[in-house]
Structures are given as structure tokens and as C-alpha cells.
Length: 579
Image (cartoon, rainbow, N blue to C red):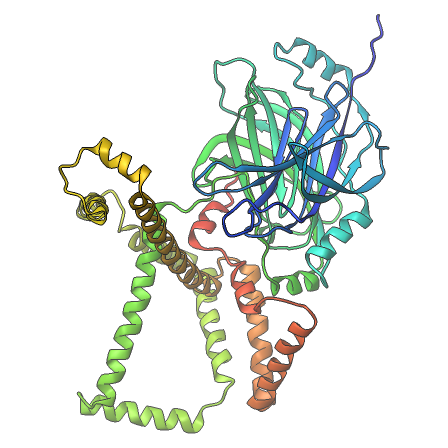
């Protein structure tokens, strides 16, 4: 039996900290930088930091590579652009060959483009210990007709240097640090969609917060065995574990075969062995179930007190491999919700005005008597007491009478979706007609801005746009209108989401957060009952000023609401287990 040199694999852990003095790429004198990493055939991309020349990412990446792969780590910095092509700021190549295994290297690297320095990037590199691929994996790799994709070996659990990891979390969330840890083991995937094209391979991307890991790659099959395990540091119990099964062809083009998103607050804490369960994979938008399944073994442990403190701190913006964009139908739903709230407020103001103007004397007399009694007997602790009673009402409906609650939720969903349901032909036709009408009106307005008759030849009109200032004026006008429309849309989405999150807090959509709110309101009720209102306000004001003096940022209520799921997020994160 001939002996051959064993094939080994290992991984490199990259902590991306920050960059300094980057070259400005936009007209405002700033850039929107993000970083791309490439090692062999594996790629990763960081999140985008807007309008800065000194971005801070604080992200972690774990990338697998093999002994036959190139040890050259390609690092490139790019300027993100919404409409135009992303521009290259600079790049740097890092040879991993001289780096010792198991040792963390803290590096400041010069970013250059065409020999010119364009800034520096700060990161740390840890090359983990190499492992040998078993004989079965070598056979699988030899029989594969595609170029060295990889094997079916069992990779080790990924661990990083504690000091580097702690430093990363402390810099990102000062004063809180680690909340707990999560161990994820991907055992098998089943019923994956198959195609007739050759050169296919599979790999999985795991992400929790700003930490991402990528598995080894195996030849594509409907049923795959992974036995891949990874340990994540948990610095926010409200983070979402995302698992994406990817398909890569011979041209290194990747597509999503299935995805899964699991909020940590929906998981049970486990001591000892992890909890094994079969999950149904969803599509890229996390809205529709597929026929594919994945078997996971999860082990979660965290400190409740630290998790509560982190809940009151601003939520970090997390990049994702999945498509979580809100559809136009969901946007229509949000606008409809804002319209209902504004209509209710308008009706309330009209009714109050009618009481004050004595349009109905009996109603005005009753309102005045209620005002006198309420003002005379009112106590500040009535406010948290009333909110707690609302929690009690919703808790009773949700847990004591689940059937009635489900019907109520279905009715609310039907009311919300009635605007764009298939049966609403009138609304669909009206919206389509208004859309085309808006387009034609916009075109006519653009032609009127030029001061030219409609009979002008389009080619000459285009030439005039390109050669004279009129075209630049039109472009500037359209861009300004586009920016204003996006601003209005952002404001509407923000208020609609806050409204949804307040309602979902009382509806126990995320029980962990609802119980947290109940405890906070109970503490406020006790404080207002025992202490005078002025002392409670003084304590709150002292905390707010002292918090800013100590460098702690963020408003606690908005930080809390940022972790409550909207209706769209609740549908994406719905836990559906296969039988």
C-alpha cells in the first residue's frame, strides 16, 4: 500500500478592528469603507461604515484553507456607493506562511493603490493548528471531478485567543464584555435541491452578531454530513444566529440553497450536552419554507444580569449574507399603520376640542368631572400600574386562551394584508394606475424644466443634456427629490417600526423582553409609590448626565425597542421544526 503525503487543513481567525486616514472617495470629503478578504477560494466581506475616514468595524472572521491552497491573504478596502460602482480605496496582500500557529499577531498594514499610500488598517491574525484529513475524505476528494474543492474531514472547534477576543468585545461594548457563549454543531443537511450542472460544491456560513465563520467545502449532494462545530462569543443575548447553506460552481459563483435564523432569546440554556433538533431551512428572504432540513446541536449559556445590562445599550448594525430588505407590500402596511395612528390622534384631538367648546354640554360636564376627580386623586404610580394591567390582559389572552389569541392575530394580519391581497383588485388597479401616472407626470415635469418643446429630437435633447448646464441641473434636481423621498420613507419606516415594537412588547412577541419590561415597570411602580416624584426625576436626570460624563451613549428606551421584533422580523425568525 503506497504511502502519500497527508493533506492537512486549518483555519485563520481574523479580527478586523479599524482603519486610519483613508483616502476620501466621495464629494463630501469622506468615504463609506468596507473590507473584503480572500484566501484561496474563500471570501468574506465586512459591513459598511458610512461617512468616515477612520472606520471601526470590530468584526471577526474564521476562514478555512488547505495545504494545497495559496497562503496569500488578499485584503482590499472599498468605498461603497448606492448607485455607482464601488471604488477601490487600496489593497494589501499578507503572506501567512511565516506566521506561527497558535500565536496572535497584531498588525497595522499600509493600504496602497498603484504604489500610493491610501491609509492603514488595523487587524489581528491567528493561524490555528493544522489537522490531517482522514483517509475517507481523501478518497472523496480524489473521486470528485471538480478542481480541489475539499474534503469531508472533520474540522476542529474554532477557538481564539481569549485576550484578543475579550479586547475586541470590550472595545466594542465597554462596561459589559462577554455575556455568554454559544456552541453550534452542524451535523447533517438533507433534501438539498440538486441541479444537472457540474462542478458544484457546498459550504455553510455561520454568523452571530459581528462574528462569522465559514465551513470547509464538500462536493454537492442532496444529503451531506458536516459534523462541523464552532463556538461563538455572545455579547448580546438578542443577537440572531444565521446559518446559510451555499452552493458554489466551478466559476466560484455562489448561490443560497437554504437559510435559517434563530434568535438566541428563543433558545433554552443548556448545561452539559447540547440540544439536538431538526430545523426546516427557508429561502434567502427567510419568508418561505423549503423542503431542505438541517440537524443542529446547540449549547447556549449566558449571564442574565449582564444580558439585561446589554439590553439597555444601543444595538449594533450587523451585516448579513441574507436578503432582509422590506418589500413594497410591507412598506404599504407600515404606511397604513402610521395612517391609522395619525387618524386616531386626529380624532382624539377633534373630540377634545368639541369637549372644550361645549358642542355637547352633557359630554363636556362629564369630562370636566372626570378631570377634577382624576387631578385630585391622581398618583404617579398609576401610570406603570396601568401598563402592568395591560401586560396582564395580554398575558391572559396569550397563555390562558391561546385559541382566541391566535384568531385575533389572524384577524389583525388579514386587516394589515387586506391592502395588497389578491382579492383587493380595486386597490391593485388604483395603485398601478397611480404609479404609471406618477411616472408620466415626472417625465413631463423634467421636460418642462429644460424649457424645450416636446417635439425636440431625443438625440439632440440628450446631446444638450450632456453638453450644457441644463442636464446637470436636471440631475441635481432629480437627486435632491430622490434624497427627500428616501428621507420621508426612512422617517415613516422608523415611526411605523416603533409602533409595531411597542405593540409587540405588550403582546409577548419576544417573551424575554416582555418579562424584562414587566420587571422594569414593577421597579418604577415601587419607586413612585415610595418616593416623591421629584426624587425619581432627580435620580433619572442624574443618571442621564452621569452616563454621558462616563462615555456611555444611547437612550435606554430606544435601545430596548431596537431588540423587539417587528411583524416582518417575527415572520422571518419563526421557528419551524420538521417532523
